[in-house]
Structures are given as C-alpha cells and as structure tokens.
Image 1 (cartoon, rainbow, N blue to C red):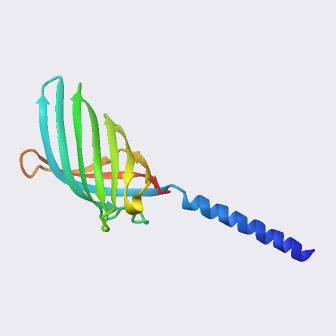
Image 2: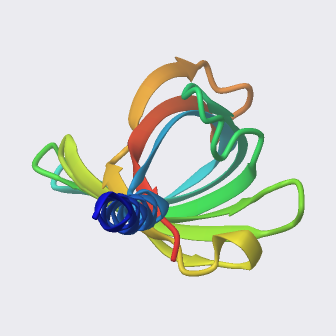
Image 3: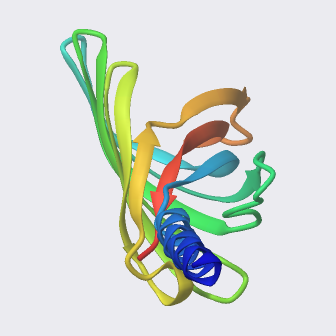
Length: 163
C-alpha cells in the first residue's frame, strides 16, 4: 500500500511540475529599454491648422531589466505624423536587429500622449514574437546638431511572448 501511495504522489507531482514548466515556458516576458536615436524629420506642410511631417531615425537599445532582453540591438524607425489643433497623431514602424542578425519589426501608434506598441514580425530566434506595451516615452532630447535633425532617447516597457 505504501508503495502505491508513493507512486501516486510521485506521478501527481511529476504531472504538476510539467504543467508548471509549460506555463512558465509560454509566459509573457518583460522588457524595459532605453532607446536613443538620431535622425531626420521633413515637413510636408506647416500651417496654423495642420502640420504634417515624416521622420526616420537610427539608434541602439540599452536594457534596463535584469534579463537584458533586446540589449544592444541596432534599430531603424520611420513614420508619419500630423498635428491637428495641437494634438499629435502618429504611426511608426521600427526594425530591430540583434548581434546574430535576427530581426524584429514593430508598430507604434499615438494620439496625443497615449499610444500603443506591438510586435508584428520576427526572424530567427524572434520568429513568432507577439506582445507589446504602451508607446515609448521621451526621456531626453538633444539640441539638433544640424537643421532638420533630431536626437532623442525614449523609455519603453512592456511584455513579449515567443511560441
């Protein structure tokens, strides 16, 4: 009888451990990044009622999280913006590349101060990536080094999941 109880206990414990490991393996992972970029902006229209411009910038990520996820990735972003009655509307896309050459592509949208970031695509180790978070928040801006340029650092936090 005792052996039967031990066997049942061991079997139940093993099943529980397998389910726990499976849930951890598919859990959302956090990220917390400082991203600094430099780029160019170009106005299409500037009037009292409407401002329309596009931008393109290149930069690098620094992970602030203990997991160091996405640390040291190079990236390029581009997007378009409009300002109507003082409210910023923006959509942008970024392509991140890690040291192995694997790629992540994401999309950010913003209306005023609110916005959302989501992962759209990944290659290599990032294939199937999903998740995102609130839009990145500017934490520092440099004085433009030359006309039509910008220098900015953002803080981005969120979660991601891989299959």
